[in-house]
Amino acid sequence: MLNYTTYRHKTSKKWVTFIHGAGGSSSIWFKQVRAFKNEFNILLIDLRGHGGSKHSFKDVYDKKYTFNFLTEDIVQVLEFEKVEKSHFIGISLGTILIRNLAENYPEKVESMVLGGAILKLNFRSQVLMRLGTIFKSVVPYLWLYKFFAFVIMPNKNHKESRSLFVREAKKLYQKEFIRWFKLTADINPLLRFFRTKDIKIPALYIMGQEDYMFLPSIKKVVQQHTASELVVIEDCGHVVNVEQPDVFNEKVINYIASF
Image (cartoon, rainbow, N blue to C red; front, side, top):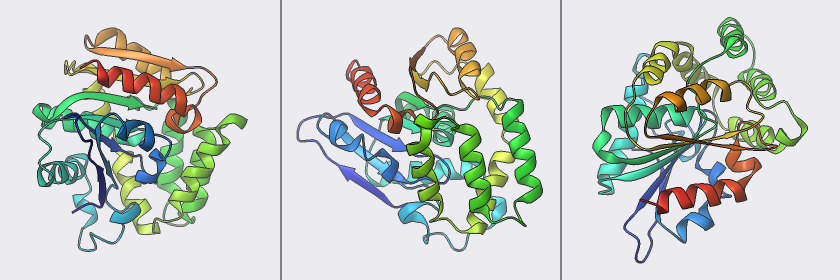
């Protein structure tokens, strides 16, 4: 089972589950924990191969790494902890897992908060994927990860986010990075499906104004999906919960409290 941490509130019955992105861990939510545990029950999960879950799955073959397979990991934790329904907060690639969970287990999802959400790979990100495919087996994965982080988060005010994700990525193995990279290399059909299907589960997209690679597609989706809202944070890039934690926390806590 995945490594995870729970904080139980004395009176609240609401659960909030945090899902990090590729190369990260539950520690990326350190600017959220205090604020959220004062309001809700919270569940922080380390995805397979990340953080405290790094050594738990040595018998897994590469072919098993699919979004459905990784979603089942999360469901297993929810069921073990007897969390029947939760609000989910994700960042970057974690938002794809949350959207996939909502597709497969809608009864478990009260709402989705999707920060730095990925619903379409633009030309620049597709070029990154191709470069990664070419070099992933011959170039140290950390070099690639640093390069990707700089392209996705290029501005001076994104430095803390870049440093955090590179620091977390150092805890991965080369083989683990390749598994996750292969997973994202074939992501387009799934994202196309998510864009076209209005799942009608409440969703708050919270994006940085400077998230140039992913914000344009989110704006289009929110116009088409009836239960979706969009908050754009100024002077902020891809990792909104790290770069503007006070704004992120206020917006998201108010959103979840409204249910």
